Image 1 (tube, rainbow, N blue to C red):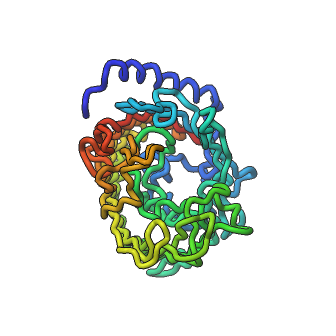
Image 2 (image 1 turned 180 degrees about the vertical axis):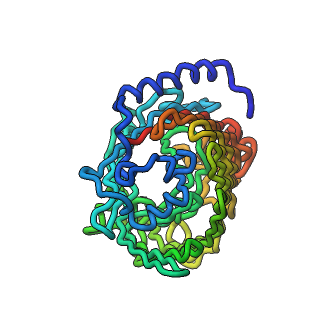
Image 3 (image 1 turned 135 degrees about the vertical axis):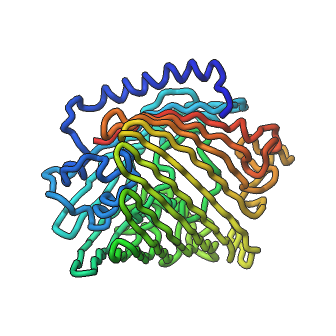
Length: 462
């Protein structure tokens, strides 16, 4: 990792203690306030989350989710809250409009807060429903003032049952949810890969598979089964969250509107032995998306996402180690981004790998590698824009002179869990390439390493 500039070290030394104190002032001091699931099961958070690193699940945590959030005794008030305070600093903030391009850079923020309705409803029905308040949801282009907004976040309503007998154990169920792969129980699918919410700085590639973009914009019903703790199968269909299902959407401004019912499928092999458990899986989704969400008619763009993933965990106190891999290949065809039929097919690929270690459910470190690559296309990845005089000029910071999404880099992380439901973390996103190039990627002189971002956070749930 490059050495931090002196000013950055000084800012960080001020920001982290302030983050801790600011959030601690908002939280109850008693040790009896636990998240809704922990209250229901009577278990410590580390029972469900690997080394206490929420939301990564242990085998027990996966069992709890698969059985519809119904294990334990139903809580009188099945509510929980979550809050995130953060600080981000981008390496190079030179810009003609820094208040827009690098909004809230090097500022301590109360970023988001969520309320959860979570746990058992009946003996076989349970729910995980999240409503989130984003303190920086939108910025007025004229005054540059920020406005907050509350919206539906991840929602998963389940019916589940279990059939057990000599030599057999079958868990099966149905899920109504608003995010493809959110019903999954491993943290290698798109819905659960980047789990610390942040709005600012550069924290990955600008391009992503369609499957990863549909959260809180769709509504779907799925069926799943887990056989003898070894074979997991899930099938689901998703459509635009409209009408009565609009309660599952994050708001009226739907970024991607699906046509009809779009299939999703998941298959995974799982094994536990001693302190070890491992998973190897595949997943797929086909989506037909209207190019203009405000005018859902005419030709659609088709997205065919195919993925393979794997996870390994070692859980034996005081040690917790996790390794994860995920690769998604997307084929885009049927229409281009302007809705023109019979456009040439394009490809997009996303690879992610992560390894982490936690000691005593308190101190942890992780290292992630990310890479997004794909076909060049001037419409999807523009590099030039009319400057107002009829001449084309480079798009600074966000543009791609190569018209290509190629972005890759590393993310080291250190974190501390002072209490079972509070995490303090520090991440550094280091870019080797961005939007197709290592240097001058936007055609205006900006290098990939200029986007390196320090991200510090305090994340708590009660």
